[in-house]
Structure formats: structure tokens, C-alpha cells
Image (tube, rainbow, N blue to C red; front, side, top):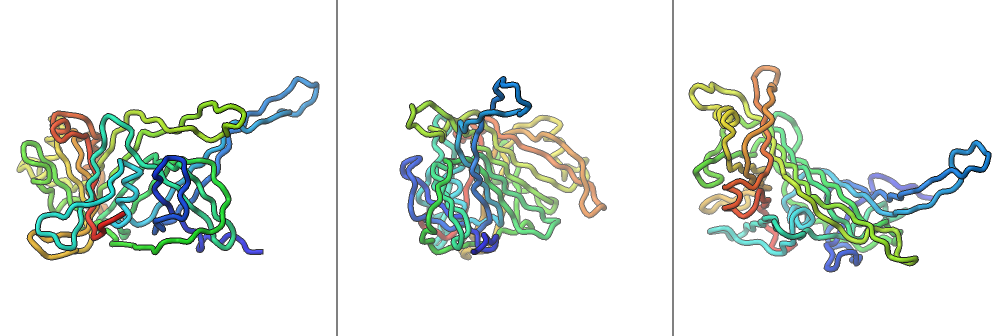
Length: 343
């Protein structure tokens, strides 16, 4: 009898046209590892029966799922995951003079719940596959460290309906893209200039994006045949974060002006970008990337070091609806550049 082998496990998904209606087969075979975890909420009670048993009766009152995945950040798969994270975007634009390059832009809907749901498949096809419908995202983290030896990585998790046991579906072709390089990442910090004008050069050590959705499952009564799964999702306030570390240079000559901006509590426009390989050499050259634009002041100053030799500063930018953000129409946005014309 075969055992479930980790090496054969896969995670695949399909965006749902109707939330909670499972889609078969999956349309995207994800390039990273992950899992679906069935979750049951159990009520236990002890009847007063003169016995020492701590529990005499129990009842399952909820049946949901949790899911997660992580691996190398891939701009080819970013548009699919950003549909779960931000909102539905089904086609890219072509940047100026671009021939092969496609730009996918995800600006949050600020006054409505717009995130997509997905049907997720997980398991070893030689043993068992689990299928969970109505999967929604909790959060995603994307990080890179130029002082390390890893590529840019990401992780994501969420919730979904209690999984069904299904036969192994037909998988689509796995169209992996570029791995992004921490040594090629970029950071811009602007005030009066347009976002993406003033680059921090030669000092950027590490960077991380943290993007929560604010989504949570809601359980409503559905009568004796209503089932134990959540009924729909709700959304609460959320703020994204961009955390970065830079080397500390001579503040007196303005080379480390982030410190002055932090001390003055200056409202900022910040752009962080994880770059990959060249897509095409036009005017300008276009590279694959994953990008965050975020608005807010620098916060959470912390001292560190690089290679135990040089002092560093770490800052956080928490997205807020300041005057710059109001003009943009959102407190943060995500984008990615690749060569894909469809999801």
C-alpha cells in the first residue's frame, strides 16, 4: 500500500467564478510547496454522572480548512495570487515601447470586498488528493535579503471550506517564470516628487512586503441540512507594511536622510521592487519584477549590522490613507511585470 510521499505532493488551484462553487480541474499548478489542513471545531461537555471522565459527550460544530504555501517568488504566478489578495484583474497592459513585456497592476478597492476565491487541490496523486472550495487569502509576505544566499521568497495562507477527498485531477502545464534576485531589488522614497523618482542606491540590504486581506470566515445557521462550513467571508480594516534595512552612512551630508525623515515624521511615497531578469531591451529596458507602492511615514527604527562590520537602520512603512494616498486612490498597491498575456 503506497504511503503519501512529500516529494510527490502538489498544490494547484482555480479561481472561482462563483464563490464556493468548486472548479474542476485546476487551472494553475503552483510552483511552491503547501498544504490544506482540515479543521473541525469540537464542543465537549462533562455530564454530572458520578464518573471521573472529564468528557462524556462531544459534537463537531464547525468544519473548515486552513491552507498555506511558500517558495520562490515567481512573477508568472503573482497575478493569480494577487487576485486572491487584492481583487480580480484578468488582463495586463503593455508598457510604453514594450513588445514582450506585460504589466499587471492591482490597486485595492477601498470601499468594497473585491478579493477572489479559489478552489485549491493538494496531496500526493498516488495516494490521496484533497479539494477545498471557497478558499480565501489571509495574508502574503514577500522578502529578499541581498546579504543572504536565497532568492526572493514568498509565503501565503488562508481559509476555505472543509476539504473533500477527490480523485487526482488533470493538472495544467506548470508555466514557471523568473526567480527574483535580492541583489537586484530597488527602493525609492519620495515626498514632493512622483513616486519612484528618488532611489536609495548602494545601501539597501533587505526588504519585505507584508499584505493582509482583513478577510475572515463567517458562520451562519442554515437549518438541519445547512452544513458546518462557513457561509461567507467578511472584511475588516487592514494595513500593508513595507520593511527595509539600509546601511547607515554620514547623516550630516544627507546620505542617510531616512533618519531625518523618520525623526521628522515625514509623510512619504515609498516604492519597493524585487527585480528579476531582463525581458527586453527597449527604451527603457524592461525586467521581470514584483512591486509595491505604499504611502505613510517611516516607523519602528531599529539598529542592526551587516556582516558584523557596518551599522544598519531598519524601518517600517505602514500603509495609511494620508494626503498622498488619497490622491493615488489607495493606501498601497501591488504590481508585477512578466510576459504573460492571460492568467
